[in-house]
View (cartoon, one colour):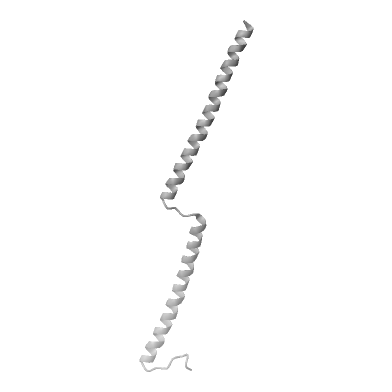
Length: 94
């Protein structure tokens, strides 16, 4: 009876081992499928990488700074034009 009991336990162990292997394979397949779907979803959303965002932020900051500098230059030139229209000499000519 001992050998029969051992055989049963061996068979049960084989079944459980096989089931565990199948469960692991199924889990790996599900993980792969979910990752694939998430990658597709993210690419469809047209998200940008953080590095690209930082580059664009830097470009926008530089553009804002240039705009401010140009506004100051335009204001100075407008003031100079206005003074020339009024018949006054520019402070730069002196």
